[in-house]
Amino acid sequence: MRKINKMRKITKQLIIIVCFSFLFNSCKAQKEGNTKDLKKPNIIYILADDLGYGDIQSFNSEGKISTPNIDKMASNGVMFTDAHTSSSVCTPTRYGILTGRYNWRSPLKSGVLGGYSKTLITPDRTTVADVLKNQGYTTAFIGKWHLGWDWQFNTGTEVEQINSLHTIQDVNYKAPIKNGPSTHGFDYSFGFCGSLDMPPYVYVENDYATMEPTKTTINRNTKGFWRKGPTSDDFVHETVLQDLTDKAIGYIDEKAKGNEPFFLYFPLPAPHTPILPSKEFLGKSNTNEYGDFVMQVDDVVRQIRETLKKQGISENTLLVFTSDNGCSPRANFNELEKFNHNPSYVYRGMKADIYEGGHHVPFVVEWPSKALKNASSDQTICTTDFFATCAEISGYKIKDSEGEDSYSMLPLILEANNVSDREYTVHHSINGSFAIRKGDWKLCLTQGSGGWSYPKPQEIKKKNLDLPAMQLFNLKDDIGETKNLIAEYPKKAAELKAALKKIILEGRSTKGTTQTNENMENWWQIQSIVN
Image 1: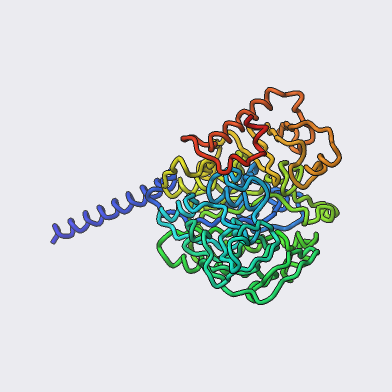
Image 2: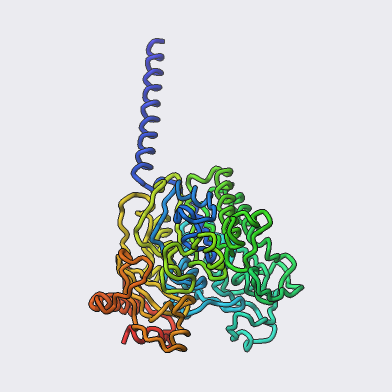
């Protein structure tokens, strides 16, 4: 009997030792950042539309618009204070986010697509959704697509060639769209084709319109601006932001019950025009209706974060919040100035511009179980970097023909004082003008803004302004881009221009074999750079 009791005692001790050893090693693996033995994180990418850097209080302490929920993300995660979109307008930026490739390598060399435009992403181009799906993720798009998809038209191929943003086309709404989200790696999709001010105003779910349009929305030249176009009964402009949020919450609730990690790409239609804050937020910002709409965007973040916590999956969910470009002049900068609020913060310019106000955006990453907390990084990143980040997180090996301009942000998210591999960052304006950045130096290969602020391209031409062909700024000394140093530092300008030429002609900015840009023969904007 004594022998049996002794054996039982030894067995218990062994069990305790094994358990402690397992717990110790598990904790050690998490502490050391070993992701191989841990469940892959859920990934949610929230993309605001036309939100300025200065609109978020954690990025602009003097800002007048309250954004407590995005601020909580920042205090529980990592703020990137030198984050840039690949373009200063929305379609091209969205292309870069999903493909990890600079937008100007695609056929779209300037401007944006319309609501009836064909797909910009070719069917064989790998997207971040393809990458994650390949690695065992379920994937979803909910929101504003604005990358083109192929409507089926009743009137033949001639109408399909019309590229106007405003042309009302004879769409067969009963036929499935082609080359939309499902072609590009998304298992589930729900959203609309263009901006909230671009017809047709119809939801498309898994390639089919949810309803055929029965009425026409008229053009209203107010803060609630939108263009005339066919509208379905279930598409109510004033409730679209919350309707999409409800869809996103429903998706999270459903996927939280399963064992597979999920990726939700959630591009919002706000605070882009039409500026339509709900009654709950009208007057709440104590600025103007744009400020109220920004507060409603912040509330969307609250709802998503609370859903993740309620479902018990917030700890292992990587949540990203950023904007697709700088703030639009439709926000009414003059009106906001009366309230001492500047959506562009200390930066020159606005949406569409080559100046910092066009593409320098707030960027926050929250991943409670792994990421740094209450941290700030001044490393230069670009929205194209999401592709390589997801590839590294999921264990996907990027091919030479994929993510040509994407650098992983994961080291910057997980550890302080890490340095990005990104040496150069290329910026792009609405008219196709280029800028290239390295460290403190930025070279703009255009005389003016290349966009909507003074001096606009048409103003330079009309008034025959005598301006240098290029602009060189030292952002460390002159964050407002007020002093053009092109005459003082011609060698620095030549060095940056040569680097841009190399990046363009090699079809990539990352290491790898040379790739091909699309539509090179009609690309007039690069002639002065590569010749």
